[in-house]
Length: 285
Image (cartoon, rainbow, N blue to C red; front, side):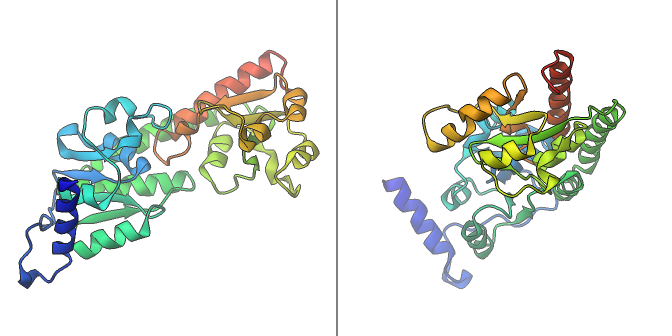
């Protein structure tokens, strides 16, 4: 309780004019930041790819969860935060990395308090991933590392593009029902894997009836989460869907596509391998 009060007093002090004297003030902007802090799960992963642990002040606690992050092992080598203003005040980084999709109030407060910050857009496609990597790498002074990550992603995507088309119509099905996916990373993964997103074919709705009307060859569903008896679970495991697509359903962990990083190529490659295996077994039409 005492520590929480101290942090709140520090924040209140920072809101006062500089002339009044500030007990806690943010570090001066550094040309090459040496203590970088990420307050978003997806920017965590980019930061862990671009910097050695000694230059990372902290990442969010979510990045240590292997169900959510592809960089969980690396995240365990650095400190963690909960993405809150108090964390930034306490850790005093010389650069904060944030996602524009996250809390606008937190980002506005950090700007008001004078912390150096870079805000990245949430990538919706492969070009957006390249742009985010380059923007962050340039700010960190690791442009060569950023280009290496992009080149590795592009080599893997190029290898995928040389594989023969699968000629499969695929739909994304989860507890949210039928996902349209157009313009999103999920759709980019499907396209890179060499399959067609059946949800683009114009059938209205996202429920079971819409899925039956589309009648895709295969379903791609998120796996790795907690399965229970919620409404979402009942939608995802609807008996009609279960029976009609028995043997024609591929699971992929959301951690592979939820964040726009160069590791998205790995998700596409893994999905392609699983779809090819299903087709060889004769479970795909």
